[in-house]
Image (spheres, rainbow, N blue to C red):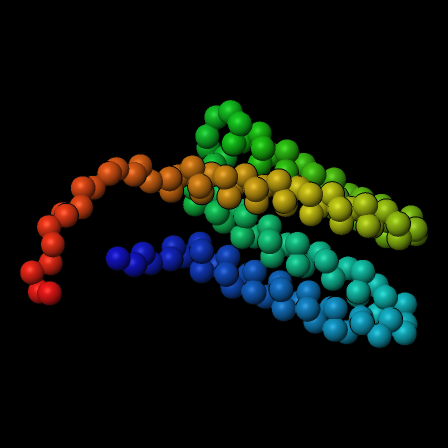
Length: 146
């Protein structure tokens, strides 16, 4: 039995693929690092890649209605979103103030936030798909074909 993908999953797939393409292009274009623009492209390439991961996480959380649940699921995802938002603020501060060291801190906050959300989604998947196993007696009669 196959299950068709929801339109939101197709949209997330398209957006995520586009973002990954942009991130890879930024890495390839910035790799020589001969000019300040290439260095900037290389440094900013993590943003579209992390946005692609965020799109997938958001789509899964939306599909499972995790933000509608009371208690822990909502707080874990909101805490992860706060980490991602703090990382974005650190990025903005880094690029307006000048020193690039803060952008690494911003990247770390973003990826930690995405990692927390992803780990929660993985744990939720395991919890949802846990199958109750039952013992099925095997027929122990010898084969008559021999």
